[in-house]
Amino acid sequence: MTLAQYCCHVVVSIVFETHSWSEDNDRGVASGWNHSLLSPEGRRLARELGERRRSDGIDIVFTSDLHRAVQTAEIAFAETDVPILHDWRLRECNYGAGNGMPAAELHRNKLRYVDDPYPGGESWTTALERVGWFLDDLHRCADRKRVLVVGHVATFWGVVRRVERTPVVDLISAGFEWRLGWEFELVSEVGPEKCR
View 1: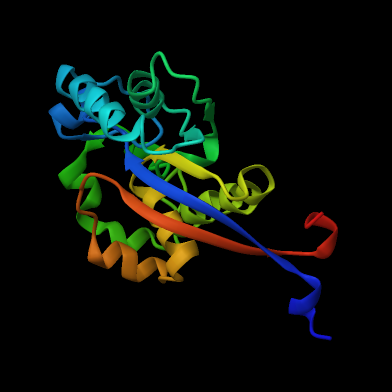
View 2: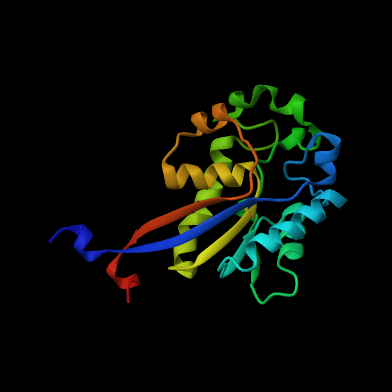
């Protein structure tokens, strides 16, 4: 017998949505680990997210614990029974001294920080690995579930890296283009003791 015959597959359907437009987005600021509230436009977009996703079979929502993501999830799923859980591992990249800098200035040299951390912060590789730790734990509580993840660019790239095996440098080189959600299937192999 092979190892695969002793294992089973855990499948989680992941819907990813970025947090809605924030006050820092209005100012052209890269929030990083700073908290920023949603702008009036962001609150409107969060309500639209709820209209799109409330009847979409979502079993549970996981959100970054940064205010802009929490607010997005809470507005979108207000007056529903869908549980919303906050997880710090879904945060944006920690830009350290660059948290709160003008975004155009901060992101001018993004590739420089693929493996080297921002001064006082973390590298993109570290940020994406952090999201990977969350995904490692997800199969324990969400097998065969449809999960909505509300996060940031680093959150999105962390999911893509794990599911599609895309190298970090390729993700950063390609950049990020916003749209109305992405869907992924996370398949994990677990040992027989977890298949019961």
